[in-house]
Amino acid sequence: MKLASVLLGISLAGLVTVWDAPLKVVNPALVQASAQEMTVQQKIDLITKSKGQVGSGDQLRRFFYGELDPIGIQPGGAGTVVNLYSKTNDVTFSYCSHFDVVVAVAKGKVAQFPANEVR
Image (tube, rainbow, N blue to C red; front, side, top):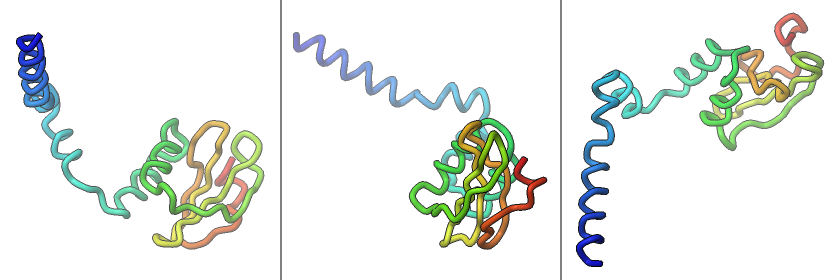
């Protein structure tokens, strides 16, 4: 029983030690990107670039967890969109929960976006 425990411990230690080796071989930039913290502006730029695409809602929740306040609802997306404001960064995101996407981004507090921007 003790031998099995020792072997399990050694196996786990070896696995943890070489875990990022395949990642470094495939794309070394991924290891560097994960090691560096993104600035708030880089996060906003990334969400702006990916707005309207699947996954942008995930990015919004991951980057701004706990700091978004709803300030308005308006027609758009698949029925309605919610405008979420980040007071600390002074930026408003328009979010469609039906498709889980960000449909608009603007600097400042925007209660309603133009209709053509949130379609």
